[in-house]
Image (cartoon, rainbow, N blue to C red):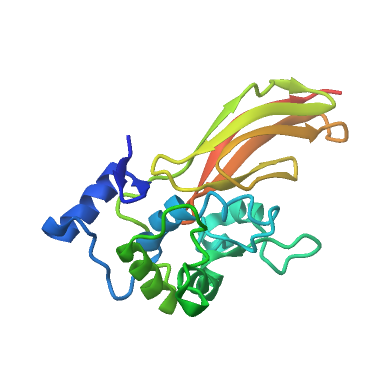
Length: 238
């Protein structure tokens, strides 16, 4: 079960590590040049509920659950979050490119008013949280993955052995470290995108697929690394 620290939850190991670094004060120490591994837990706890997978739909402008999304790191899973310049459907602006906006939103407003984020009446950021974000936005660096980072997972249920016109089944994306996850399912030259952690109902039109066996593969990414997971064969019989 995650440990609570301040106003957000952290995996137990990370919480103990921060407390140990803090000494007896109970306040985590803030490096002069934090990396994404330092600030992502803060954003996950304080911001990503709104600035996460629904950010584009709700008009919030930028998504803070990933530093970036590149094929070099995420492989085919990067297709789940197209870049902001993609056509015809642009993807979201991610945290690495939104550092200036993050800084503006967490600083006091004109006349010394409360910061825009987190929005009231919710609790404000703790002093060390704001300092961590301020230091990071000054030089937004991704840095290495957290020590012991584990790969994301997928559970698939109800994959049929034989299909004719439709291939339907359920999948659930997760991560043992609590990281956000994106991924794709690829089969017969078709890509089904999954832009968040959680469950998806996969529904693919197989009416034009040739007869024969097709292999289902999922590629998942937590922003740090990707993993390819075979989901098994499906026989197309018309």
